[in-house]
Length: 485
Image (tube, rainbow, N blue to C red; front, side, top):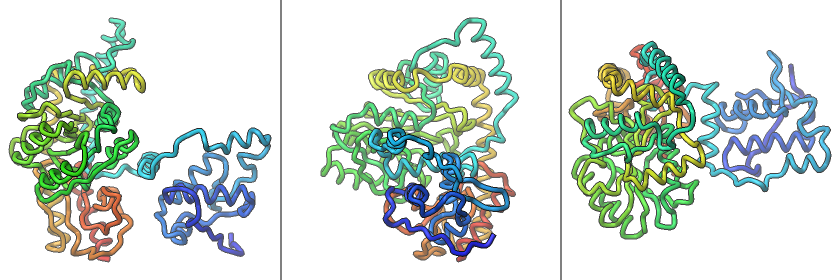
């Protein structure tokens, strides 16, 4: 269908903190005000993205959302049109005011909006692989057998009712044994709380800590969902510099001299996103500062199981002066994110406060899955699976490094990570200040994604964990086409 005129849209004056919300509000306003009448055809997602200078995925998400709300309709092989019957037609004046009322809720921050829209796109677009495990390696038959046995046992013994908000005692005991035996932590089951993944553990910590007691320090390149959690609970976030050994302790001392700090959030095992392992001298210095200044240390140990070169440095929680450490871990890297199991290990008072918060939002976790994991841990199957997959991920890491050297030569540089499922690659020679909005595949994310500063990308994080060798080759070669410019 030929259109007599190209529909023009303007986002500059539209309300909203993100491009997604601006476009959503602009289209809704133009429809309700009659500029886009019922039945009118909208530009295709590609042409509108080019017109506005935004990512095509943003336009697609807005179109899908407005279609779900009834504002737009999509006709196969024809395009996207304004609906002939709008959602607000037929409503009384008072009902329309109820629909349009926006003063009942607090607005989300720009960062939360971005994270939420990314989450909504997971069904249509593959999840960004910045170091995720390969779900194809899960021992499905073993998992299914264990689920069946646990379900039968729970049913026969009438144990599918409400339980301890800290999690099943069986899994807490299994986690405590694992932390004591494998990570040198003097830990009991009463010092463990089971959560639905490490993000829930981070959020609970942000609820338990008091923003009136000071700010949160985070690494300058960091895990943004953690930052969003702290900010949502009223914390001011201070950025601490990073160097080639991780957290800059000298800069941390400067921050402590200028600000009151309630806690620091760190990823010492493999810094996220740069993959650097924090050396022992800096770990000990961090813990001494924590004790002297009385701030908590939130240790996100998100992939401790995957270390390839030598035995990993023990976690902060196992070292001297670790009284203020809250250790947060996840089983997502061992099996799959969909299982939603993580844990917090801390002093008993902190664990009790975590359980009190869980009562308000979740009551308790999934008893079946918790007992399944406990059974697999006690039988040695989890350890066996980790050994097997660790070898596979190490082989994929080595192959990914070889492919970057083969395809790019000396145009990129990187330090082979000692563990984890991603490589931090310096692409500054190829980019040279060019603005890159995105990358072609889902296996790489630009360094600018991990900070809210307006900076040009200098590195990318390439996730190799979820890729077999042929997929690694394809992804690296796609990158070469884009970065060549």
